[in-house]
Image 1: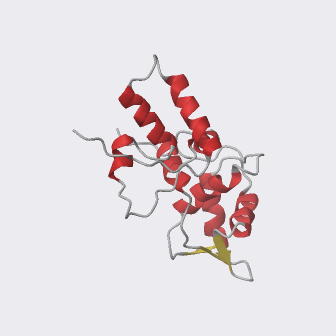
Image 2: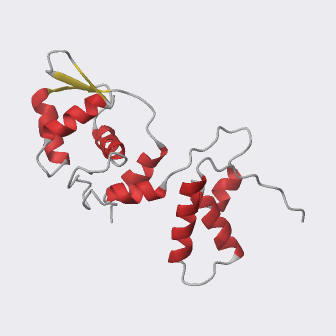
Length: 173
């Protein structure tokens, strides 16, 4: 059986190295060949080695997922996906906002009161104004000039959002 050569392009070598190091540290013993292939593929943003192999050269490239970022941001949410605290690090704040953005219904107009109630329900630290202002400033939500209506701006979220939502959303038993 001949081996096919698989090329792996790593856009962020630092994030790749960190993700790989974390996986190796969690392993009970030296990983086998197959376990090492899976670790390498996961560090590059794939589910596993089979997922990596299934992505053809014709398909658009898969965006790598920074699992370290996902892990750090998920610590700011509880088991029900409620934002417990606003991260002090600017690098973590956008992904927190993306998680809130994902909960908003596409194409729906929210009144100021609706928006306030939603944000207070999705965050337990009681500063809906900070969240509302950050969502608008980051370009995730549009606000009418009079500030009475808010609407989610449709755009492509980062690859990390899907992984974060899986981590902070309670799975049905």
